[in-house]
Every structure is written in C-alpha cells, then in structure tokens.
Length: 89
Image 1 (cartoon, rainbow, N blue to C red):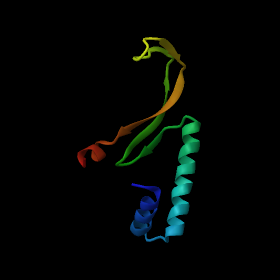
Image 2: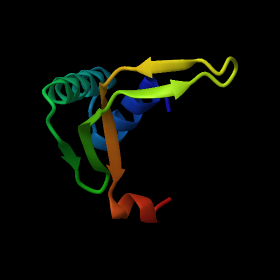
Image 3: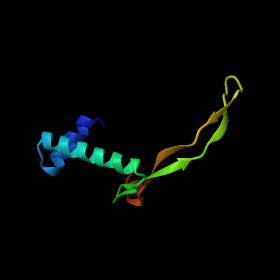
Image 4: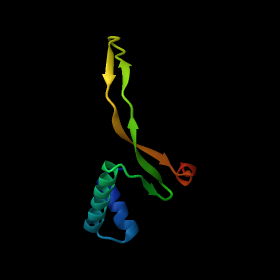
C-alpha cells in the first residue's frame, strides 16, 4: 500500500477530506519518528508494539571473499505483532 492509498483509506474510513487525512498521517509519522528517536516504546492496540533495541557490535564474514568485517553496534526498531493481528493473517 502506498502513502496515497493509505491517505485515501483513512479519509474514507474517518470521513475526512483527503487533505486532512494527509495532514493526520504526516502528524502521526512525525510523532512516531520523534518517539523512536527518544527510545520510547509505542503500543498500538490490535496492531502491536514498536520498540527501540540495541544491536551489539559483532564480527561477520564476507561470503564472497571470506574476509572478516567488524559491524558496529547500532539501534534498531523492532515490532511485535499483537495476537489479534496475527489471528487475522
């Protein structure tokens, strides 16, 4: 689903204009991004939980050359689906 399709679906379901639905989606994405940058956890009922997790540094091997490479530690976003979302799939 593209952003345009999502905006149209939000507009239809919420009875909003496409312009207002686009503003609402942009506000949601902005707030979501700010919360993730702060390391906050976001729970959306019937959808799941997003959280920031730390992936530790590790050594990997290039399969083509066999050379060992160091991958630095970094933060990643993880998602755990709610049971109700899993049932509908």
